[in-house]
Length: 169
Image (cartoon, rainbow, N blue to C red; front, side):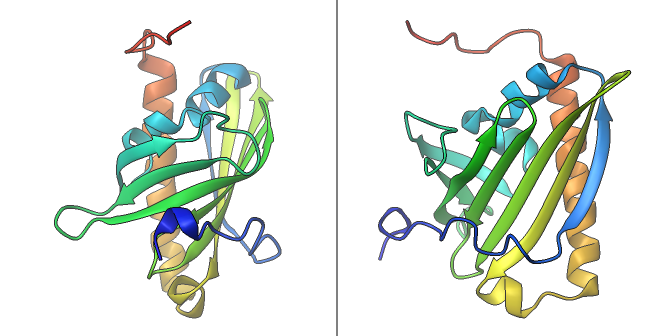
C-alpha cells in the first residue's frame, strides 16, 4: 500500500507527552508562520526531510497532505505528513509518517514576543515502532534534533530576502 493511499490518522498521539523546545526568532509571527506553513521549505529546516514530492493545493488546510522523503539515498523513505489543525499565525499541528518507523504528532506554536516571536515545537511518537521505542534517550535526541530544526527555521525567517520562485497568479 502506498503512503498516499494510507494517510496518517489525524490527531493520533495528541494526548501523549511531547518533547518541547522553544527558540526566539526576530520576526513577527506572520512572517514566521509563512515559513512554517510553506511545505516546499520543509527539507530546508526539518532535519531528516530530504525531498518534497508533491503538496496538496489546499495546504495548510486541515486534512491536506505533503508528500515527502526522509533519509538519504538509497535508503530514503517516501511517505506523507498531514495537517491536523491550522490557526494562522499562531499554531500548526501536523501528523507525520515515515513508515515503517511510525507516526509522530507535531505541534508548532508561534507567540508574539517583544523581540519578534517565540516558536515552540512539541513532538510525540504516536504510532508504530517510534511509539514502542519511546524512551528518555530517544526524547533527548529528539530535543536536540528539534532545536536544530528551529535554528534552521530562524535562519530562513531572519535572513531570507524574498521568495525564490514567485507564485503564479
